[in-house]
Length: 207
Ligand SMILES: *Cc1c(COP(=O)(O)O)cnc(C)c1O
Image (cartoon, rainbow, N blue to C red):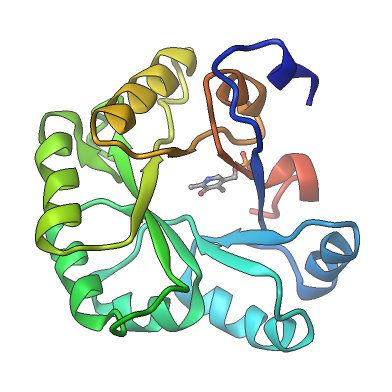
């Protein structure tokens, strides 16, 4: 991508996650035929309903959970998804650790950090982030591959992306899930390895 070439922080390869929440199966399959190889959903129920058929026809396609996950749905989520982007609290970490099949290599996760410390938003609070990341890695031994954030809607996203990158580096984590339809170019310039794009791919979601 042109924006990546212009920045020294840009990752050599950026994974596109097509966020297909609210998108019908036929439109998802059109995107698969166009080359999108990983998708994101934000509800376990919706993902289960749409993806059993799609998975059967396209077993190579990755399915990621990008929305908040209830602890009670951890087991179902592990059966459905290859990757969770929203690990954000100790009880969920414990539930995942208990449900994760031994020696499973399929599943990986990102810890979501609430970089704007917004009360209504998911993500571990900034002041708890370092301890929580350590706990996920050392106590629960979860397959954490990086950090994720959703910057506050009313602020420039770049400082949030930079902060996420800095926290990740402190913990030796190499992947950054950041950037959506409105700010993915900035996120890629700041080192995103995974961008989560919905409306820019599929159009405006019905409300
Ligand atoms: C919906 C959603 C996206 C995609 O947002 P767009 O603005 O439609 O690209 C990305 N990440 C998360 C966590 C989402 O819920």
